[in-house]
Length: 227
Length: 411
Ligand SMILES: Nc1ncnc2c1ncn2[C@@H]1O[C@H](COP(=O)(O)OP(=O)(O)O)[C@@H](O)[C@H]1O
Ligand SMILES: [Mg+2]
Image 1 (cartoon, rainbow over the protein chains, first blue to last red):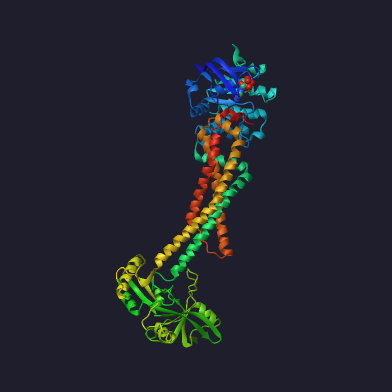
Image 2 (tube, protein in one colour):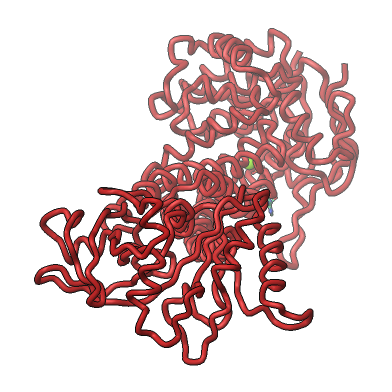
């Protein structure tokens, strides 16, 4: 099933008089269950693409369809709902709330879906278990290692059963060994059927993916599928 | 997203910067405490003065000669006394409206007892006067029937007079001189305290009316045998005060043969009315005090707004994250509004307790009567909630309008 479809998508930033074209007429289709790595040099538009895919930003031109929703036409409330229900974010610097326990961090998306305390706790525990943090649920971020924090973030990304997980350089702040651990989690998740799109500029990291798309100056210069 | 959860999130956020939260609340605490304390002073004064007016006697109409001042004790030159004992009888006849109509005559005099010497108000009265004014005896007795209708040389003293001429032992049974007339003291009155206009109501000696008429005022050229300075009228019940007032007016105008269009030669003070007027004007004063105090509350609100703005800036990244995870703009708006309402309500609550303590201390140390009105507590509570909403609205709106990407990228 076609999960994501970008047609002629462009994003232009205006800085004073200058216009920066971060993405230029991008066409891209991603199927349900794919594991895609986005590569490319710094400034090539990878993060811009992720923000658009994550419904955090709107394209300047073109159309974006996610899971049959025409995202380019939705208002801010509808976009918040899409982010909440259909998308799981994993950030480079984890982005956990400080002074807040692992389980409370994982529960945040569920709060905005209107679930009650019991349901939230149940779901959050299950996902923390899935990333191997069963015995760390009451730890606060400053009591966890970088790898553990990123695993909390992955649990949070998964907690609302999204259709796609978007990870922008999820191993960027980790050492290579911990990075490998995180990647094996992603691989496992993908095997269980979850669609994953991640940005990286490390070949090793990208090698876990089944498809590698390379960007340069806002355009796709290579789209390679492994078999 | 429900309110109680938002409230918990707000409490957590406030606990993170506990000291800052408390300092922010301080503005509201002081504001609310000031409102509560100052309004309690105003209300206390109101209660006291109304109490004093009521102490004059319940359901009372006081009729005086138009040209005489106050209770008739001080009469200007040429003032003509129109009220007579016949008027009293005519009023007393209105039995369906009036329970008592009791005349008095007033003068000043010197009371001497042994070495003690005291200048006081002399009131010539009948025994019904004590009932009209709800005045009870502390020691001894009132006039008996015989004394009432004769010019018996007896008197009943107010507390102040007792204190000044017989400080050490009971005056009852002793012989004193009032304006050189020997008078036997037969009783002493319970104290009534100050009247609303600051006059000592206990600085008084009450002597049968005829005695004052014949023996004490006897030498006075203007003393007519049937003259009356004041008529104290007790109305059957408080709801019929105005009706009684109108009726008495009719009777007296007829008695005095005043032609239509001419002015009354008497004046009727309706205590019920006076009480309402005084009560209202102190109410305005109290409102003014409250208004001045609420300036502090507004300043406290500005403090909240200031801190909320700081908080929004500090937590920009958190806001971005929450938006990325599915928070709608209205969720963020609610989060910050609830946070500022929590601040102001906790502040308001502490302020109410603090204000009650201050009010208690004022009444203890300065001796002012204070009354804490439940209304002022309720108003203070809702006012502080309103402060939270009003001054939290702008920072919260600012937070909710952040762009999620910019907010996420904020360091
Ligand atoms: N908010 C922004 N405002 C202006 N220019 C931006 C903004 N975000 C990104 N850009 C520009 O768009 C281009 C692509 O940036 P980005 O998508 O962050 O690249 P990458 O993630 O591949 O390093 C860069 O030239 C960058 O300077
Ligand atoms: Mg980037």
